[in-house]
Image (cartoon, rainbow, N blue to C red):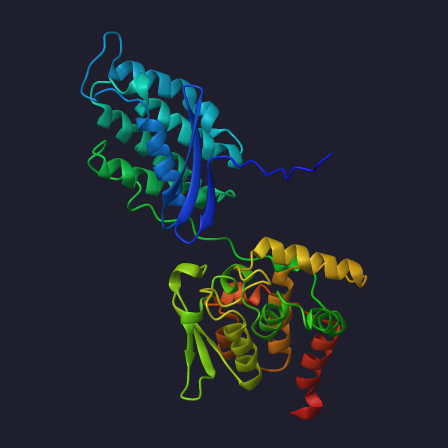
Length: 363
């Protein structure tokens, strides 16, 4: 009996390479699959929706008896509440399928289809903006995807203006590192010893322990972001605004040890675009790295440590060493002082040290 490799099925969009995505969709019970070129996942979702919407379309100007703008809007209103109350993971899928219903064959003959599409966009925009204070998980993802979808609708002439063009993403809530474990020096040394010689995670782990950057940012660094001196040694990493949480350009400062770590990452797979790559010469996925840390902690009986715990560790170590606040923020990449200070943990030792400074005897 031969074992056949079973491939995990995916729903909708799957990245196949740089600017390459595989999409699948069903129209009238028939499955379609193709590989497309897109810069982002949101753009790929938009193209997928356009394929669903236009598969088997008759002429959009053709008007069929019994189909009207009012009928389309009535159907939309009857489905809105169910869609908006869906769970986050389901909501995006509902939005895509729902919009497709209006532009697929059934609604391809609707009079003034551009008004229907604009109405859908404006209603979803109002709904998403109404959640600004609540900031539920996944809303920014919906905004990104809908912005790309309606941009495509505009290009195809379904609407005259993209209602999501000027919709800003909801500011991220401040980190709450108090829920995270603050690693001890022993735990950090144990993890560092465990990754020495690892073909995938050695350089990335050492880098995170040194500067405490977010794993989602560090895994997106590219070799072209690293500036070199005349001796081909790294002097800093220029952080592109699009990969930061605040959309601000920044940089990662270097010393000799950090430059050596980054140089090893540069030389590991020179032909690859990403700075930190795994043994298979691919970009390291943040979730894969989290799983790796979890296995290390289980092997050495350590408390559960996530990549964000390194950020927590670096912030506290810098401030406990008396480093200037702005210098410390330059290392970790924080731009908001309130967010930075939310990582600081008070200790009995620190409080006693502070009281010793204010003793009357020293005045």
